[in-house]
Length: 167
Image (cartoon, rainbow, N blue to C red; front, side):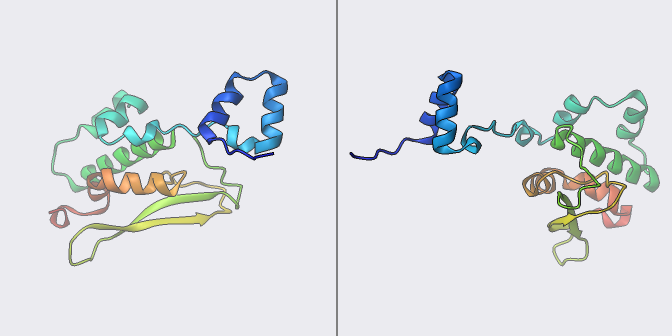
């Protein structure tokens, strides 16, 4: 008997249209992980602060900080921090880290602020944590951290650099 290979997409379609018994047979033959729901990738469309705030819905008090247009360096840093908190919340899609789980990776960007090219993202950091307090800027995946660094460097600059350094 000739063995045929079926495309994963075909198998997934068959699974979705099958009875409980049919689903069970497909899961035994191919493994349950093939039919597990894929993670939501709406976060990839979050590329502007407008798209962030459409998700996070800042409060009146937060808007006072987020809309700050003055020159006070502390307020500018606070504005950058507030932007970052909202960006992380939107990208993580409401998923919270389990800070008691030292086997769960947490991701955060780190920046080279002394490079010859000026302010630049040096990469991301992934770590295991046994902390009982969490970081407000931790992301749920490496891909999320890279996305945040690519699309929101200005928010990091506002938060991390003094006025004379933000050029």
